[in-house]
Length: 163
View 1 (cartoon, rainbow, N blue to C red):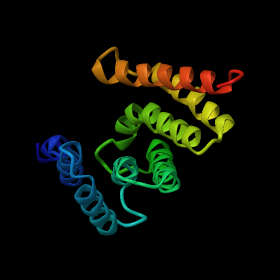
View 2 (cartoon, helix red, strand yellow):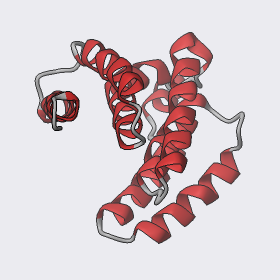
View 3 (cartoon, one colour):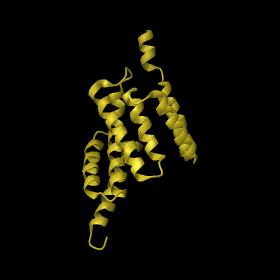
């Protein structure tokens, strides 16, 4: 009984990350970045891969410099790969990461596009499209697939003569 309750109990770190993300979505990007960095320091470079993946994923969105955003998105992907390899905590992080994977790849594609690296952008966009096939036909899944299509169009327009 206690084991079942433990598995269904909310993850306090993910809850705290979610609270900071709400702060960011409310428009306080600087404070959100500050608080997320504090959480990053708290969990450390070797903390739970799901926590690191989630934190880095959202920290990337708070960056002003595209190179910094790319660095955080790469950290998120590295942690996601660790979680998918089964090195996640007891809360089943690999399932949660599978749902994040298309978005992680899409973010990397967008980062590379902003940095003028279209080949790398297309590589990650291809990976995002493949990973998105596993997403449900819900609001999140449709949103990720629509963002993939928008970035594809943008990359095609940039590649066109005079683009």
